[in-house]
Image (cartoon, rainbow, N blue to C red; front, top):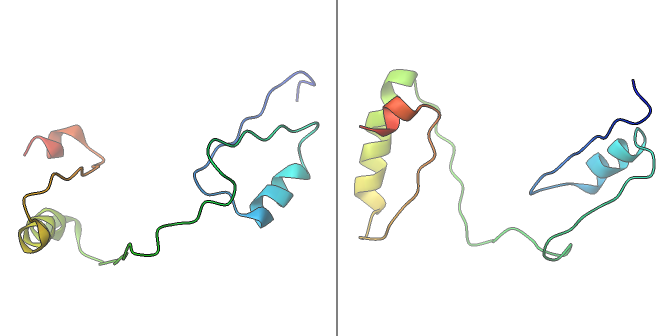
Length: 86
């Protein structure tokens, strides 16, 4: 590995244990923080994981949106552009 190489890591979440592990392999690391190091995840957010087949995904999403949408705008990130155009 070239001695003049540059290694960059970035993450919205960077647990201290992961940072400690990364520091074992870095020379003269710099840490750039945008915002506050004391920021925490919003506790009012409820995350639910549902396991569905590939064929069930789209229809399940539509049913969920019909149940929860109140006229607000929503952003959905999807893996494939051709699926999003539906």
